[in-house]
Length: 64
Image 1 (cartoon, rainbow, N blue to C red):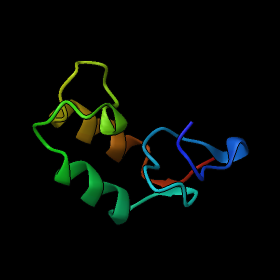
Image 2 (image 1 turned 60 degrees about the horizontal axis):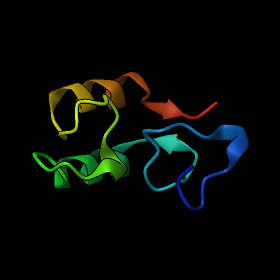
Image 3 (image 1 turned 45 degrees about the horizontal axis):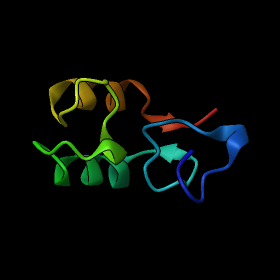
């Protein structure tokens, strides 16, 4: 779990723990683009890139 996230509404792409996947989370992912920062890794391929972006976009909106 990411710090500050509510376990009842947790979703992995909600990087800032505000209960939604939105532009703030997209900005964080893009800032880590090309790195292997596990915090922003969603796809499991050990690099932040297109696969992670796709997963973030699939999760866009309020966390359930």
